[in-house]
Length: 60
Image (cartoon, rainbow, N blue to C red; front, side):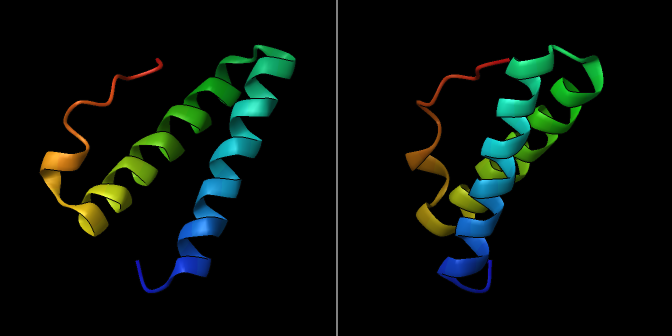
């Protein structure tokens, strides 16, 4: 992650994908949402370190 704006844009994309899934319940929307959540988790881990994200539970 290069900067906070890039990270925020990634979070925004994830939230939009999650909203799309909950609105439509489409399998493709779920797949996109889960993929973006994984990318966000990896970005968060790279910023905070692996110990800070271990205790977070998965939604899907």
